[in-house]
Picture 1: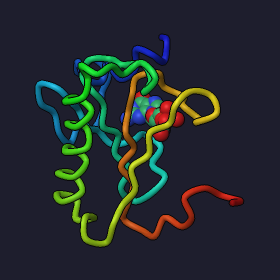
Picture 2: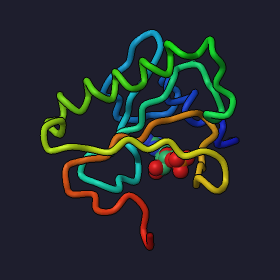
Picture 3: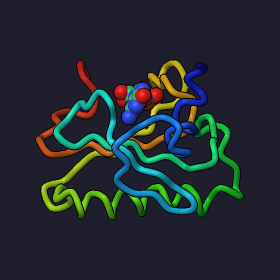
Length: 117
Ligand code: 5GP
């Protein structure tokens, strides 16, 4: 299976994942390989492969990703201590799955934003 299809299949319930939130526009589920005590992926239900492919008409959808992250941060009790949102894009950004996704990370001090800087 192409990795591009992976998150679409999770959104559709065809591949199992621990889904924490889903509505008409976005789905949030636990990362299979968590890098922090809380590591959630928030994706648009409709695949936009990378942020480069986002258009002006996607403005509201992109906002929904942030609002879902804020809601989950509250529900997962990491809002007050703090958290980090990451969106990787293409090779230099380290993007592995080509379905736009936001990483929500927290539950511990995350250290410097990038290593070796
Ligand atoms: P990227 O490197 O593209 O920004 O992040 C892709 C993320 O997807 C990685 O953190 C990886 O652990 C996660 N991932 C890859 N395959 C699966 C899967 O089958 N299920 C879930 N829940 N997460 C996955």
